[in-house]
Length: 142
Image 1 (cartoon, helix red, strand yellow):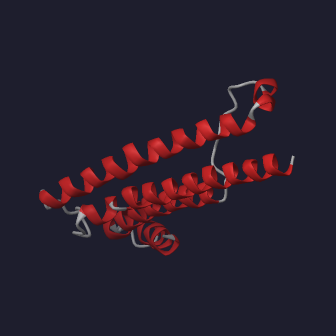
Image 2 (tube, one colour):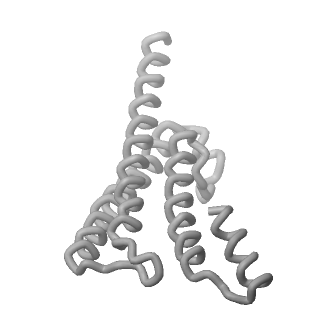
Image 3 (tube, one colour):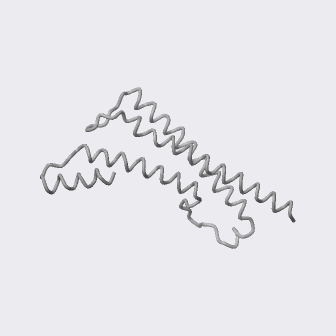
């Protein structure tokens, strides 16, 4: 992606001939990089969260609220990313849509959505299971 963007800038300002291939390649790379980055952040438990519930309420039952948040993330990843992304890939495959400059089948570009949806689902389900196992161990210890 970096090389494509550097070449795009170089060809545009030095040769005064912008490269359309590198523009499209950088866009597709950004899509894949962004989605795999979000899956990676989910796996490292670094995903973005907004604290709308006061800390006093969260302190009473953090496992419950974290479970709800993780279930909502899993539901989103399954319904929107996995199912919706798969339908998008299938539709672009059936219609045989290709990108304008590179002539790459668009279902290959869009396939990052369901792939990362399944990865995010895996990480959130793993987080839910590991936190319930940890809670069970703590209850057994007490």
